[in-house]
Length: 423
Image (cartoon, rainbow, N blue to C red; front, top):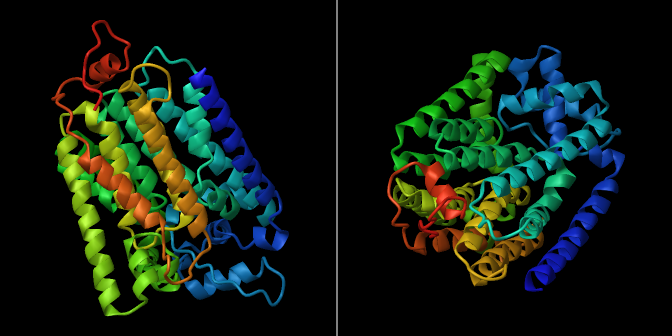
């Protein structure tokens, strides 16, 4: 009865939220369709198709091309600042008009996000005594999070990054660490590399050369494809665009530690130094989590989720839609929590995990579109910091090195004499 009630509540709340997101998405105007975040990649893809890849980061050329898609007199400030591979991913949609391309792209990204959550749930250490209902409820809760609203309305690309994180988790669960490093690196390097610095430190701290080799291969592949697309001058333009992006987006509207500080203290050298110092501390936390998870398969879920949260909060350019990257992390943490419990679902540990995800979702919705100064300032960074601290405070699993696939099977109740840690 308790499980059924929890599933009904989770399904109802998630369905209402998703319905609201869908209605808002359906009401996006034709002008707005052509001026979403996706439209910058669409314009860049048009430039690739016409052979102007070297000018991809010429903001004047990009802006002029963008204006041709919009009504006369439209004012827009939407430079192309992502890796050249994002333009390549949008290239097939240039056969469609901008409005239709936006609709197809945003739906495809939502499907990728849902797929990421689904495979994370499938790979998670759920106890065999639980049926499908808790997994289905977890799926809906993950997809209906606050970040999905902006993610869908803006046609963002975070679905690919989320899928890469989920694929890496599956690879770790099945003792394929080289593949894990590859999927993690290629998905984030090709879309949002600035959000993955902490995850890179987490990988290094684990000191698994197979993971690092896989990550290096993924990064090298993205670099090679990017160089082929835009040439050396285009790569130089991308590097310049990174610094341009920081100045182009108001600091108080970003959701990382620099945005938190800027929302309270404004601009200037001192807030900048404080924000950078906070980001460095968050990156150190990623390293600690990575070192603690080395050789401890039972610590993977909390460690990777905490490092992902701290990696996001350390970024100077974190925005609400980027929070969907954590959706598969919530899914596998929910599975680990269920494995640590006895009795009906959800137990106390599961409730804590769901509550943390719900709070982060509410904070994300509150911060969406908000650039007002303090009080209360940005709220999402506080939620991400809380997730990172919670991961750091969890006791280390006593499970030492071994075959993670066998350990995971035992922990999920799928093997004989299952014991194993559920930390």
